[in-house]
Length: 228
Image (cartoon, rainbow, N blue to C red):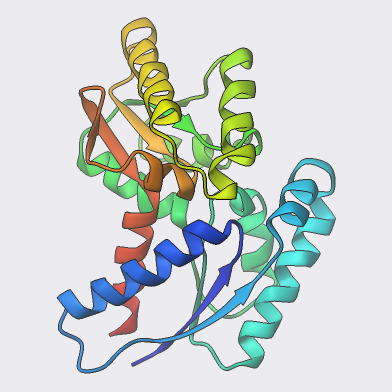
């Protein structure tokens, strides 16, 4: 089997979730042995700072991780977080090792589901960037972010609670209420859980009566396929 290089730590809880899901996916696929995985764990707080303040610094930080994984002899790489995909295109240009895009993987699934207008949730950096809208547009799907107040609220809950391992029912209910409002007010027909901790908090294929794109689950499925 091939060896996966996983850029982890951004954040810690989702990295653990990735590891568990990858092992389970390989078991379900009935691979003859456990997958070979090398994890390079980064500092989530540094990653968030660079995401909002220093794009070139973020590229350098991510390339440092990729370089360490390549030095360990991995065959392909995945980043176990959405926000660092801000610089995905730059990373691809600077390495010959294949990197599996979480965004492309999710766009394919959204198209398969027949979605046309989706809400994107995640950190402020993810919601306000163009990397999701740009890729989804290729598939004829419009991506909407919440309004300024809701983006501020969602980012706060994400970085101050979810990234600290606090997955509370109250916060879950608040996110579901936000999705419901967007469904009724803006006509969204799906929601992209564009933060890998959101997939832990919310889960499920349907939220507020509309399909939910589980970015972690879809990314993991693409990773498992690459092991063969």
